[in-house]
Length: 517
View 1 (tube, rainbow, N blue to C red):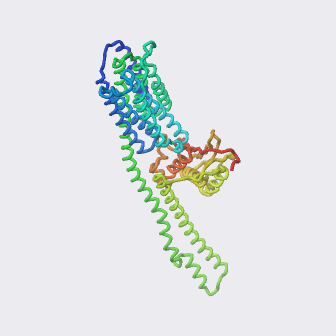
View 2 (cartoon, rainbow, N blue to C red):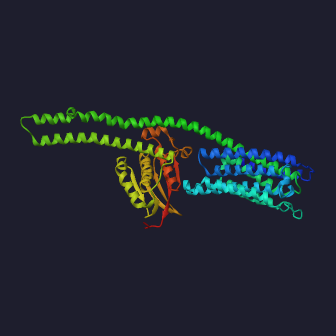
View 3 (cartoon, rainbow, N blue to C red):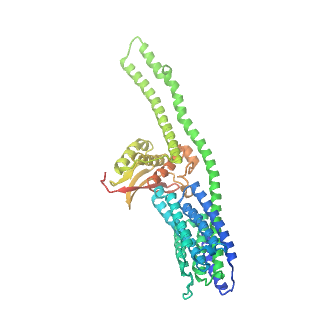
């Protein structure tokens, strides 16, 4: 983290010091150089935009949607800027290059800076609302199309005023518009904090620093076309594009690595599932022949012998019959328990499949937390008592907007998980109002989860500790399903845990006024 902070400071201060040292240089570029530079910028923006959208459709995330659309639109605007200001097309435009070049430059930079800022706002929305907060890509594409089309028509049809104001300290004050939005995006991503460990956002922050300084310090002080400040800003623009490209390549390499790891995780998962399926099936198939041939049971043989006695003892017959019934009932209960376990495994796999295919939907209604939690507690009373665990709950009459069946499934998965990994102590379900949400917590005094594993337990095909899971049983799908269901409700799920101390799983669900129906 400290190295990255030093990189940001070095980049910003270095650019400013470099400008101070070079200021006053009589460098003068040319129209041909400008066209070449903008053609290169167009190619870079196009590559970044396409790769970002490929990354978005790999696993949808608002950040990559806005970055991809922003750079793709910028590629068109940069390309248009290069074409219409070239020596061939300039005579056909209603404005000369002294106005057309700076104003079409500003349009491209304003567009990109806005989309970078929107990408931060979209992340905040998705972070607050979960899946429900995702922005429709069609709306983003329409916004981009409207902006770029309007720009094309405007510069092709409207005569432009001068873009230079030599009477001011900053000859091109319009450059502060994109500088403002680059600065806001930079502040947002620094506050977000992912730059500490995410390579893409680290390079994105560097790009925003370069973009902000190129607008605020270089281009705003450009006095004439093709001067040092002008060409420096155009060079820095391409540097900022390359920074985002580097971050994307890091990110996509990481995605590829995770895909390989996911393939291995799926193989491990299938091994676990095959074990979990075999166990209940072995019980069912093991007792089925016994029940088909009940005459071979010792209790049945004893009963038959009693019935064959010349002197029938009614009490002995009754005892023998009860023994037979108890033995058969015991076998049936084991088969029933194994069958229910098998059904849960199948249902979990079907739920995961529905999520994967996008065919999962909720039936939202007003749900009483008290009633739902009470029913879950009643369901687990015996399981907790068998392990001498104290099962408690504390609710406050909250009502939420939820799918009651799926809310029950969330709580069953969390409470069942706590009972499975808690050998002594207590388990408690509690709720509290948190703004527009109700927060539900399931706390236990179990074995706990390491800090490094806390971020992985909600991933599909991931388990915090395979040895512990194998000992307690389970496939590791339960917590993945919990997160998916909470996301669909527009809530967030969280875990706090310490090894040997226990864990607290919490999730939020949108609330309604108490007593509403």
